[in-house]
Length: 182
Image (cartoon, one colour):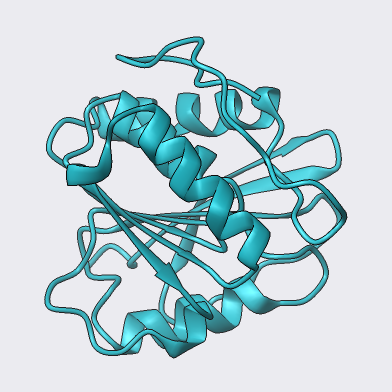
């Protein structure tokens, strides 16, 4: 697994061993970031949250492309160790915060994030539940882009947000969500 573009292009990332974590494949990550670049233009200065972070590859990719900071939330101990090792290897400690715990344990946000990346376990509906809760708690606001990875056959229905784009990539489906246009 590697960083695809930006300042850390081609840098290798560690991934936790075992079945508890399913890292996003390079091809899937490349497709996701292509979708995001076509909408955002640039990642410069963005505040990002990488939820169900696994190895942290999604958030680190955003930082490599110019994001200002990233919050990583993960509850698996082996994955948390990998995230911290990856951050240290890239010398990105000043831009990163790692929260060891469930996404559902996050409290109210000080301000909405510009980009929220979620890669929950497939087939659990955990992403939709988390997005609904985080929207109520202020993590997701009218200007926030939300990127959700689910299984290719899963349907995504989020109460407060609407689907901007969907793309299937192998066993995954990438869904970009926004607040409804007013």
